[in-house]
Length: 131
Image 1 (tube, rainbow, N blue to C red):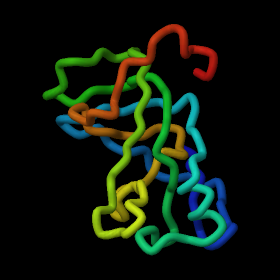
Image 2: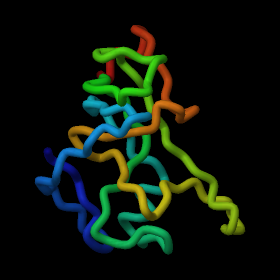
Image 3: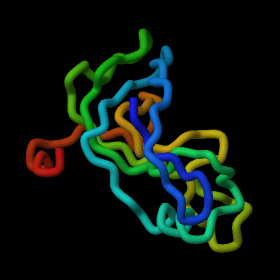
């Protein structure tokens, strides 16, 4: 699959990367749209103390479920979802919203997310214009 990889300050490169495997409690999502937020822009221009290149960035996506883990019950293959994986960095004085350093972001063809994530939501038909 293809993903946009942050390689260094002001260097984002499209790469072929392995497709992630769906975990037992996860969702495998075909990304239809990925937003670029303020933190993504900051990482691109200045880097981030928690983001070590090379790294896939991005955390706000909409898409369609391709596969579900064997323990997932509340979703269906083909269902449209919106996911905004955000985590508070409680050690930061300004409480930046970041994707954890050990987790790749969402600027890719296919992504995984925990089905228990409170940020995984069914996308209503009214928001279909960006999907």
